[in-house]
Image 1 (cartoon, rainbow, N blue to C red):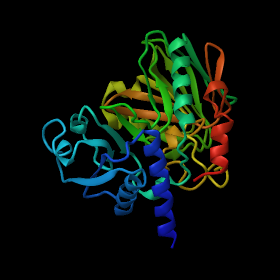
Image 2: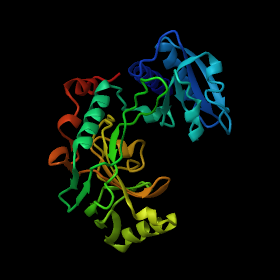
Image 3: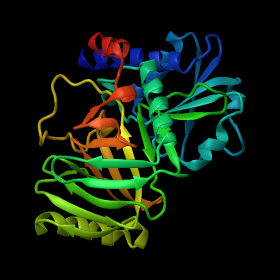
Image 4: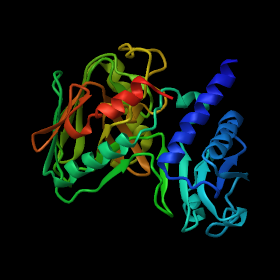
Length: 337
């Protein structure tokens, strides 16, 4: 009974996201799968396409994607939208999107990951306003009551976003996601990052259990202070990467994705630290080192304050101003699908 209820809810959530992506009734919608795709998630995607009036077709990939731009996808009947459930994402998938189609890459591994997701146009508006703030800013400041005090320059930096919308032909979006991010201007990052108990070390998915202070100078991690029980593990992880770029400050990201929970998570909530979408969650601030595809560490601060040119974006883990949900988005979460 519970599985059927989860399935029905996943269909409703997926269908609503397809509507936000402007899926066209009467057109073909392709569900792209591989051998590891959760069959319930696949069935939910097919049913969601039917619910929005599309004609679903399934294309299964085993190992490597079909060759050539749009191969097999265009042959499936000029698809309007492609729901990508291919867990082993490969860069060649980008070449498979016909110029007239959109690809919605579902980063959830199961329908259970969609619990608490409430698709709403307000997320895209907040992401857009956050990007405007970053683009217009000269300096970003991250702080908290525990001693974090990091400043980075924004002039001419690379910035990015995820809002889960694939609304324009030939585009791809990851969903459910919601965040804005910026790289620091070269050599400008300076200050300290304090990991407090309850903050999360990524990509390992560990809770910080004792305070650890990271020192950043000239855009690089140059010092780490704290109990050896914490710092030895982080130093070992960085050393295992085997590249000096693992110590370079690469990004600051702000999570905007609102995931409903029956109650706020406890400080050391079991399974929360490595739960789905942890870095994108509402009010989380991630400070990451590395140089893609090299991954260093990422400090997920749960109660940070962020300002761009002294304009508050996050205060003690709560989104502010244009990044905060409006009354319509709040109402949607009070009365979810």
